[in-house]
Image (cartoon, rainbow, N blue to C red; front, top):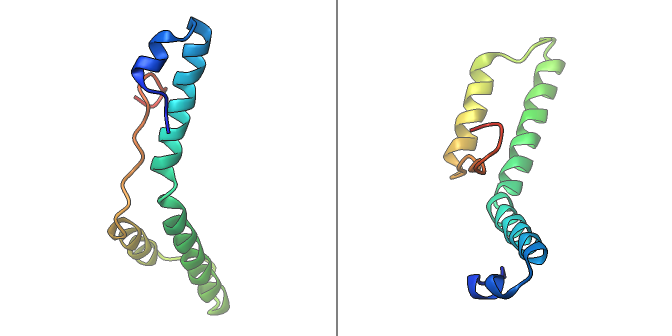
Amino acid sequence: MGFQRRTLRRLPPTTRKFAKMVNEAESLVKRLKPMVNNMARLEMESQALWNQHQHQGKGEVDAASLDMLGAQFLDAGTKSPRVPKGSPHD
């Protein structure tokens, strides 16, 4: 559990900054952890699709198959991770 605001106010400045970074890291882990299972499933399906096309003699995966996998991933209830403020991707 993260540090409460009241606790943070009582800490010295450097310790307060460190505690805020710990809170942010915990929050990031909570947001990313649910995506692990979906990423693993998507990776396995992608590898299976790749292997299937390689054995059929096709050198490339067609765009329709990739679109289907992407739609399945989005339908799995994943949301794109929020980008922290001040990051270069704002």
